[in-house]
Length: 215
Image (cartoon, rainbow, N blue to C red; front, side, top):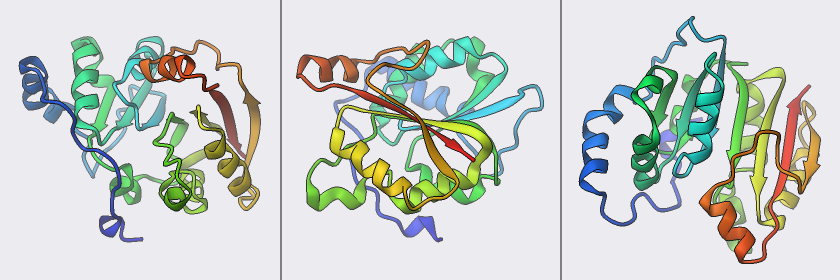
């Protein structure tokens, strides 16, 4: 598939970056930017992919707790990337590569069964029925995830929009090598909440957590 022709829906930038955020995007982001010829450093035993990491609160915590894991983080919202960089200590620069655009641009550069874990935490819900096709959990995208995920490894998906997860459950019926092994309103072990999740609670929405395994 020619992913370059795929239109991206969603915000690229919000309010103006602070001077420090501008500095981080100019000086630090190029050092961590995901290259098309990416090769995993043998120092790391595993590689995880975080799709749409927001401001990176959860991603930073995962990096700190998993020194043997290399992370690839994708987030098209520039303000989120800049915020993440402000949270990340220099000590962890070698443990992360960042893509500040649609992850589908890089899809063909990922090897089969490359990832030990994939995260899709609070993706853009596109709640209107007419926007349903924009949701990341389409059958096509789920098949893409299955290709790059190692057998027996898992995908964690969290959302506060029940219709979004209903679509996920329905689409998974059409994919033979992915199955749900966890489906609960209880967060994952060692879960780190985010501002977005706290907002969902305040507004009366109940987050749900699903884990999918490749079989």
